[in-house]
Length: 320
Image (tube, rainbow, N blue to C red; front, top):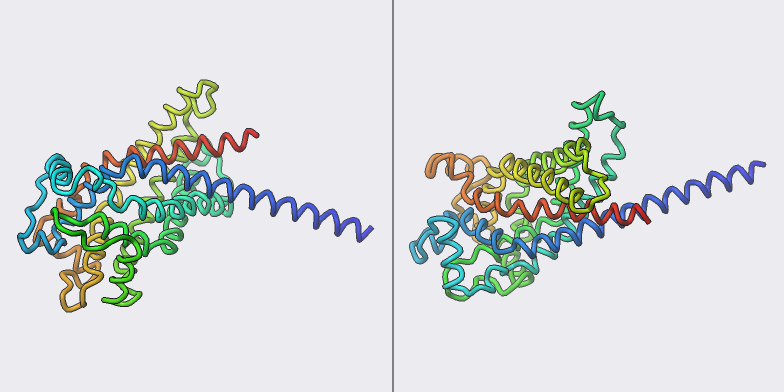
């Protein structure tokens, strides 16, 4: 009897473990594929956003060698004429390498972390339901960022080359190699503190608001695939835009800090997160923390696509 009970418990535990691992893999793959597709589609917008956001920390623009970008249209036009249309996808391969594990871990961790919280009824306990979604999304984002931060740094540097001359780095490995040679391994993590702080409100709002809006979406399980996907996209777009603006100042500061990573500390424009915030607001005005936010709002179409694709892919697996 004891032997049978043990076998039954062991068998049940093994089944649960295998089921959990299967769910994790589905979430991992769905999140990664969704991210890779969406990032490739929105790469030109994202590159323009990064160029505008980081131009005031770019040595070529600071020195006057390259003129500043005056806006989104000017940036699009000059990149196309100076670097060619293909340049809009500069760093995209690195972005996919970075984004696949980032987005995959975000979704996989979010669902795993969310399972650790008590269940909350969205109708009877709305505040608790919303906070659980926010917390699980924020913690998932912070955890995944710590894993892939060097790739995030490389993505920023590869996409921030300006002018028509030779690119500063010849790819992902060259970027990491030169940065480590100049400032050590720690230089790859320049700005990670503000990144973790910023990713919590971003991922918290991004996932939390989407999960909450989805919970109230009457077309969430509609048999008409067009209505279902369309309603999910609206929920996702609202979530992505809200998340982008909630965390944008933190993103601007981390990009500025990343722009000086390969330089000796004596040549750094910003001595740290607080100093960067202070100098930007003093020298450029508070609005400078939102430089590139317009392009970022356009870029959120990609973020919304990720959420919809992920939701549809996991739904397809669940129905089998």
